[in-house]
Length: 337
Image 1 (cartoon, rainbow, N blue to C red):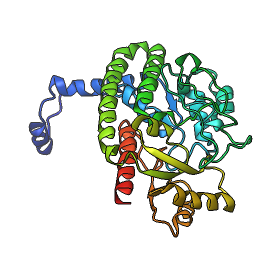
Image 2: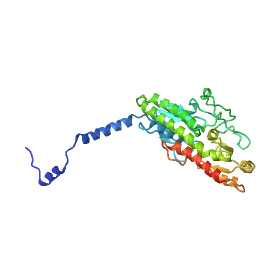
Image 3: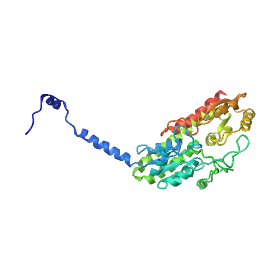
């Protein structure tokens, strides 16, 4: 027996549009999209510049997790419980290597046993530069995380060497090194997730082209100030200097986790005058007051460089913002000095 609709229900029924087939399909499409996202591998990255490269290659598949977020530095970072959980759940983990993220070395052995772990300082084709010592560059202490004497190692056959301290680990500050790391990232992701191989490879090709364009852009930005010497807070910029022919005259400290003593500060103060350094650059995470002490009574100006992207929001475009920021901040300070 059918019940008659009341007057109000009749009006409601008349106003309701008939559901079309596409409208009925929407929940199914949403469900399918959710399933695709769930199928994406869990990928964990150590620091922002590496996270940016991995994010660019994973676009359309998933988003990698980041360990050293915000203004934290890998030089002073302590692993959080949430980081430990991410490492345990990861299918793929990307880091630079033990020379930079020393805090990760033991956790990776304990927590990352089920993951593919890619140390990007092993990427074929990397140019590796030694730490600088003596003169305006502070000698390395044996207790330093970077280790003792360095030797130049630009030969790809030796890229697998993991001896702590054999090379400067700020490898990403040369876009050509970023290209080499991106190639290793792509190979690792394809091996771990072959179902999305075409997406990874297409994104990698687009990233490669963007890195070439960025390299050309930076060459033009720094060209007018290439001959002007400057001092940096810690010696993190060799790869940028080597690629673009700029002149870093010295560093306040080699290891940013070790604050230099009064004698070292006085020595650098003298060097600023002797070398005719035009700028002294601080970094966002570390004590800027030291820079003011060093430039006091000299003609040098102060600026800020951010080699580890402490002030930048993580994402696929961060690497480009980071490199442009370093180039433009160098140009602005050195041009006005």
